[in-house]
Image (cartoon, rainbow, N blue to C red; front, top):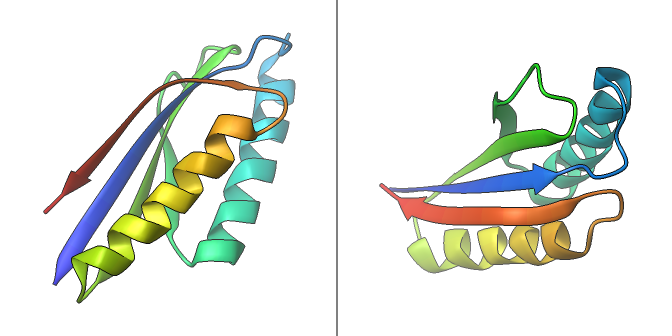
Length: 93
């Protein structure tokens, strides 16, 4: 069994409130959850309205499948509108 975790750090340049930040997070997380069947949660900067760190976890019996899925999510994160991807990390357990 392989567990993969993708951590994404976003800078929300045009967000001026926590409400606007939540709108971005909910939209992104809903899309990723439904498209890739992964778990996702905000893990840092909950009180900051222009920064967030999201963690995405996936479990599978094959590391290749986990790697490919997390890489596809990373590519989506790089081009998502409304936010700038300022950092990422993929870890396997």
